[in-house]
Length: 378
Image 1 (tube, rainbow, N blue to C red):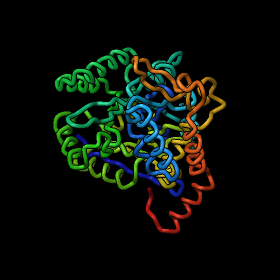
Image 2 (image 1 turned 135 degrees about the vertical axis):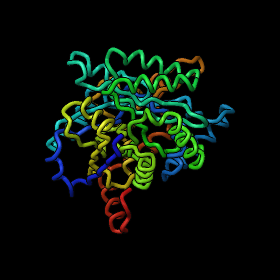
Image 3 (image 1 turned 60 degrees about the vertical axis):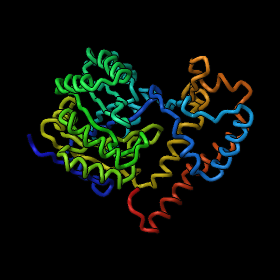
């Protein structure tokens, strides 16, 4: 097996390198088909000025009125972009670099976006892909599975769901082997050092090492992520080096900012790109200018994209139509159907604060402050 090779270019200073490549590859981004759980939302809101105080008041009021705590685990939101809009957004950015676009959309545990885009097109033109949530030991991992064969994609999704329900280790191995059998499919461990399960860095690292020992031969690359910090991404690249994996770029876009990291390739199709990673074990990555912005403000921009009005998207222009709650009867309903008398009074001031913090003037001031302080890349 060839030793892996990964090279990272920083734009715009190394913009000239695009002349050596045929295409840009956008991996790992999300659409309205993706369910984004809100379990961790209070942790982020608690860090925001003004918003945190409103949240504390509402928690106390809700507890006094109902005798129960606000349960964010019963809620999720969907992104504002349709599959077509998300695809066009990523294509547009890559096109401005003078490259052909190869775009793989990976919603959480669903392939609906890829199926919609693939319909009516030649087989293999649009990758059918997914970000699969894989429970493992005390935590869970996100596995990016790109370019499932169109005749097998739905059955694979059924088998993924079966494993998630039953958690049989031998089944997971069989699924990875089946994915490995198709040379045009790419399997990536997304943001490997993000402690999504809250188990702590030591336990996460132990789980990762065990995962690599058992299933590592079926993983083709590790990801550096456009919405994770540079120190975490460097550590992920170091982990990849330790286990001799190539590194690929996954943007993890949820809002309207296109992926901040993309892949560069001499391939003309996604299947050829998968071969570059799997067989040649060679990867080239472009870190785009938006990654240089302070990460906290980019997260705020994503949050603002999630809650602001989008007049161009009929039927889901307001955030209350994009946030869903599992009700006591087990039925999932949008907030627009539950809040028939309007949103609670405390929410609008919170949204106003997020809008101000995410505004271009504030983000520009934050970027200048980081630069003046000599702060490293986020």
